[in-house]
Length: 293
Image (cartoon, rainbow, N blue to C red; front, side, top):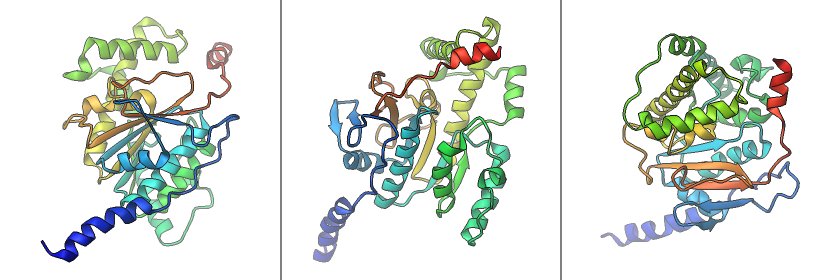
């Protein structure tokens, strides 16, 4: 082999390893450790942020699960995206928070920004949905729109969801396993504070699983390396998107990172890595829902 080629093969990985990462975000939670606590779930290793980025950087697909109302998780997602982009080119970013009806608007805004024209009201121009708190998602969306890679929707639109309620699609294979469906039933009950009529649960489950299927389809069609940001249950290996991937959830090419709060429990069958952040004060969403009812 050419000696110069041998030298390059040795030097390039060393240069990549020496490249500095972006500064870690300041926590909005009291008592945050220097960078939280990161664990590789298959073997229990504690990881530094750099080591986590190295492990995620080798995958074609990275799925990151968030707690939607935790500002630390949103800040860490942006940091992970920026850190990975320093290690290798990013192919695409997919968001649960965007649906097919918004994609033309996202594309138009991204094209406008590429020419140096930023909208006066970015959220309005994107048709951002009020259910997703813009102050949490805005910094990441703004960053992604200014990059060369595409920002892609990964959800169902309202008409599709209405169609699922009218006629539930058949689910086969691993996602149809009784254990998977039971876990999702329980999660749907809890997340709706046990206030849903039992008759609504099958339709809610169908919507959940069709969302997972859509995210898997979008991931498989997206330019790689691709990153998906979604709620924790959507990215979990045992119940979510990985079960719907045609190529399976190969642990070398598809990596799952869950952002969780201290005191929560994440198992090795659910993800490859967990990044624990300080527990934030609980909001009693169920009490709020009961008052609204």
